[in-house]
Length: 259
Image 1 (cartoon, rainbow, N blue to C red):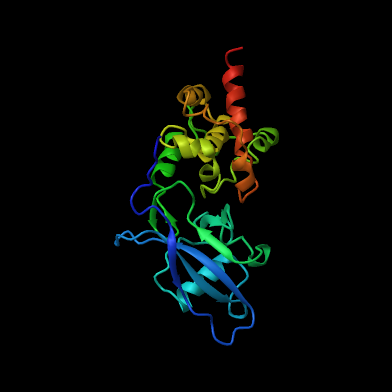
Image 2: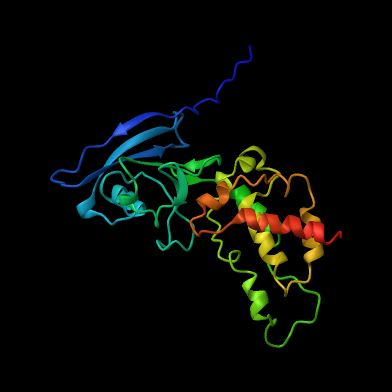
């Protein structure tokens, strides 16, 4: 019989339980993934209790409250706190989302917080985004032209501009890519929902003059065609975008240019 063995120190174990805040009337229990690369122990789930009366309403507010008042070693990324930068993306209550836009009151019972799934962890809630950013760079996300540069700007009709809606708003939080089973299995070769949505943003741009070259670069069994329209990407996108639809647009452009 085949036996499967987990890698060393991969099993998440029970961690430390911190005391409840004294005098707090409304308290929420948080279970947070912790892992320190400088140690040799397993990842663990630490338990914290957050005082609602002394904390903002979002999960990110709770994480900041824990770091400031309970455990200064808790590590996570954050920046804008407005759902714009994508820094605080993590897995909250079983779904990839932004901690700054996830309201604590929308979660029943205890709040479970993990780093984005299927990515190497730098520390605690911080994933290693190196491969994700390299894939974004690989689609060359900038305007490419061969015509002489105009004196003012590249003009675009209102109709052509509307074709970019639902594409340019991506904040590269990686919630969609890390929710995609195809990306879990083939993240070294499949570009993933986020990078492909960005690729479609430039393919659909009427000002770009390298559409053929962009499509040639994506004509690969793995880079594009590992998408099986599972739709996890659209479900987990905190900006309500639809990467699967963008990928379908690329596939359609592949067919159209051969007809």
